[in-house]
Amino acid sequence: MSEPEGVPGASGEHGVSEERQVPRAGGGDGRDFLVVEDLHAGYGAVRVLHGVSLRVGEGEICAILGPNGAGKTTLLRALCGMVRGHGSVRLAGTPLSGRAPDAVARRGVAHVPEGRGTFVPLTVEENLRLGAYARRDRAGIQADLDRVYGHFPVLKERVKQAAGSLSGGEQQMLAIGRALMSRPRLLLLDEPSLGLAPMVTRELFGIVRSINQEERTTVVVVEQNAHLALDIAAQAHVLESGRIVLSGSADEIKADEQVAQSYLGYRI
Ligand SMILES: Nc1ncnc2c1ncn2[C@@H]1O[C@H](COP(=O)(O)OP(=O)(O)OP(=O)(O)O)[C@@H](O)[C@H]1O
Ligand SMILES: [Mg+2]
Image 1 (cartoon, rainbow, N blue to C red):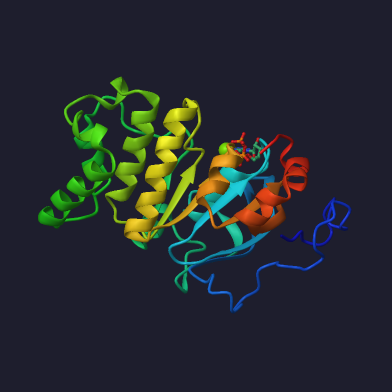
Image 2 (cartoon, helix red, strand yellow):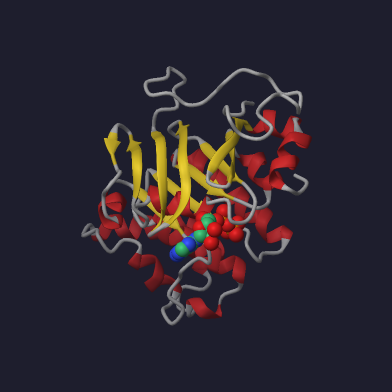
């Protein structure tokens, strides 16, 4: 686990290793699928991210944790082009920074926003087909619908039902299913557990893990439920006031619960 220099708590007062693990360009750790370097972003005059750097390996799940207002949603928005920023974002070596959301999506990034964003008057299947709007391969789309129904059998039982009449958990599944319809290489999930009962959340995280394992989809998940996120993630980063203040393997962060807790402000 490591803490960047110049941030509160970085002095080792929590008893963590002094080893620095701030990601570097060209580092040989194999985490070079998504490479974010010195990313700054915000909304007009409001600066939110102040130099975020992180690396995610292909097929890995990476968790972003942090208190409310830390900039987690803004980070995902900056990765998918919804928020403009300075700095470098590369996916499999291709620069994404400065590109519009549709261009980022065409390069394989799917974003499931906070609050899900399903189209409530449309049916389950219409919502899923919208996820494939940029595709013309009808046979492939049908195969992917079947693949999504394989991950989320409950959606198959509700194909003709309006999205607005689904339960919260089902709507979250629909939002993830819709993202999968674009066959993403990188899936960005913003607070998938928001408002869901613990049992539903556990089921959802189990499905995210099987999508990751079966399809090798790389996942960056922002999550308040740090415990669950750390169970499925390989790596985790804690964001505080727009800066990464703690990075490490999920196991390291879980093992040093007190440190993580001091940043998060709640138990993991
Ligand atoms: N559209 C916006 N315009 C101006 N400021 C914004 C906008 N969206 C977010 N902010 C500000 O950016 C900061 C970071 O917000 P963000 O939503 O990224 O945090 P977060 O870590 O996702 O928080 P939460 O855990 O509550 O979802 C906050 O201070 C917020 O007020
Ligand atoms: Mg948020």
